Amino acid sequence: MLNEEEVNNVVNRLKNHPNLLESIRELLDITEGIKGIEVADDAEFALIPEVRGLGKKCLEDWAKHQVNEQEAKAQEMKLRLHSKKTKLAYNFWDIRYGREMLSTSRNID
Image 1 (cartoon, helix red, strand yellow):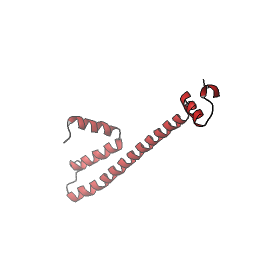
Image 2: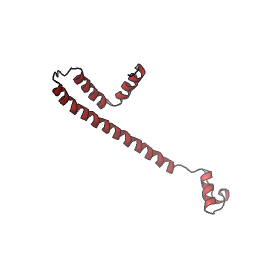
Image 3: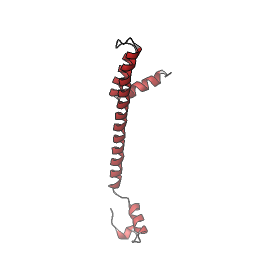
Image 4: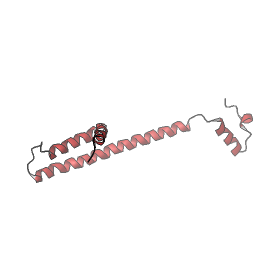
C-alpha cells in the first residue's frame, strides 16, 4: 500500500501525462461501476480496450521522452564540438603531432 507521500508523488507525475490520467480515470469509472456495467462479461469487454489504450499511451509518452532525451544529448554534443578549445588542447595537439610548443606555434588569445 502506498503512503500519502507516494500517492502525491504519483499524482504529480500523472499531471505530466494527461493522456494516462484520462485512461486511469476511465478504468476507475468501470471499476467503481460509474459506467453502469452490471455483468462481469460486459465489464471485461469494457476494460480490455481501455487497458490496451493505456499501454499504447504509455509507449507513446515513453517514445516522446526518448526522442527528447536523444535530441538534448545531440545538442549537447554539438555544442561541445563547436566550443572554443583551451590552450591545453592546442598544446596537446602540438606535442602529439610533433609541432612546436603552443607559445611559439600559435597565438590563440
